[in-house]
Length: 76
Image 1 (cartoon, helix red, strand yellow):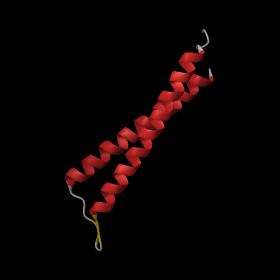
Image 2 (cartoon, one colour):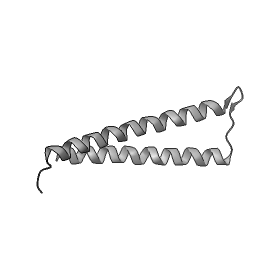
Image 3 (spheres, rainbow, N blue to C red):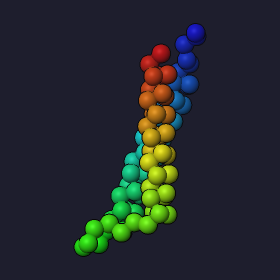
Image 4 (spheres, one colour):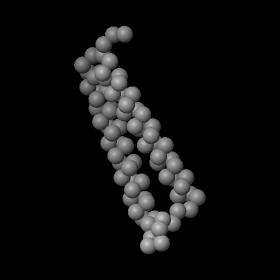
C-alpha cells in the first residue's frame, strides 16, 4: 500500500484527538448522570436509566475502538 500523505496524517491525528475528546466527554456525562442518581440509600436507577447507561457505554467502547484503529492506521 502507498504511504499516507502528510495532510492525511494530520487529518487522521485531528480525528483521533477528537475521538479521544468525545470519549472523555462520554465518561464525564455518565459520571454526572450517576452523581445525580446517587442518594444516601445508594443509586436509584430504573429501567430507562440502565438503557441510557448501556447506550453511553456502547458509544464509549466504539470511540475507544475507533481511536485504536486510527492510531494503527497512522503508524502504517
